[in-house]
Image 1 (tube, helix red, strand yellow):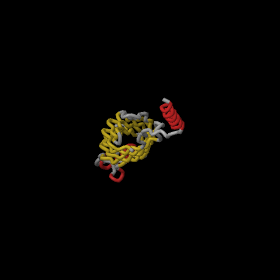
Image 2 (cartoon, helix red, strand yellow):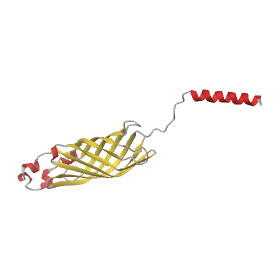
Image 3 (tube, rainbow, N blue to C red):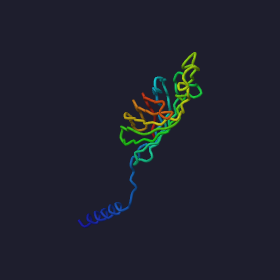
Image 4 (cartoon, rainbow, N blue to C red):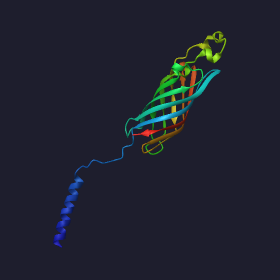
Length: 192
């Protein structure tokens, strides 16, 4: 019986010693980076005139830290929109979003700003013959700086896979002269 106590005593001392030594916790760190391909519908509306089409893009997003629910992003899109000058058929936007989700559902709501070539219209093609006689306001160039809000309520992540449906972005260009609306139909990507 004394022998058994001695063994148990040493085991108890060893367990206590191990318990006192700080051991770094190994926790699952959520992915901080996301790279996605997007398919979008996009439109620009200015009083009685509008132009709409499709866009395909590449979006890179980075969560600031595992504990802070803020993401910074950069999006580059190719525009497939009639009447937009071919050398300007693109967009480059930066964003900052509140992204509280840590599980599979990862919604985001934020602000975006950048350059949009969607307002760089070939007026001769848009208005046809007689375009030069149109009111100057209809032919005036619109500054391509866009500022807006973006909502991604249906965004998900499972391990290294990221997917999203039906996001919405609304912003203005030219000091409010043009409204830009983008509906994200689908987004598929990877996380790491």
